[in-house]
Length: 115
Length: 114
Image (tube, rainbow over all chains, first blue to last red; front, side, top):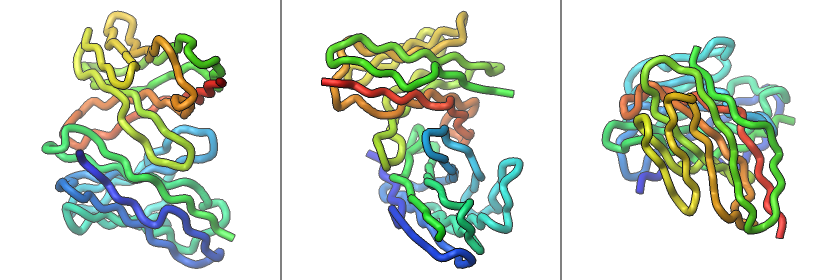
């Protein structure tokens, strides 16, 4: 079945540094990638939607300069949290979709802790 | 706008009990409906889906029927196991298979005790 590999699974970084999270679709071409943020015991908040080769579409209230999303190929999308601060600590999850995939496949998530 | 509402959790059941998690939605047109499950520290896994009214999705003993008249997609299982303990999310999309975004309910935590 369709698999999305998300790395790293956990990362701890110092305040002010940047962190990159990768999502790769292993056996299908992901024409659309979604990035979510999940707070403890809360639902998933959609941050942005990206189509391969295009600029990401950000949800209202999400800082596009802080959360940089790149979807340069049909199998790879990255989320970079720039100048991270403790309030950016969260669980980030990606999801990939394509017409061939008939649905949405989620990565396993990345636990970001900013100290 | 479109939205999904789930029953509040946490839900605590004994093993082999009957499970119902309510989900209702608000959306124009004919959305596709989903149930996802999330185990601690992991991403989401698709549990089941239904893409049109009266469809029944089923998987691993779980079932949900797409009821357009009541705008509902309640999740049921006849006999839960400890291994079913997880958070369950109901979701909808208006543009299935074409990159449409998923709209999630708030999630319902299920805890099954032996």
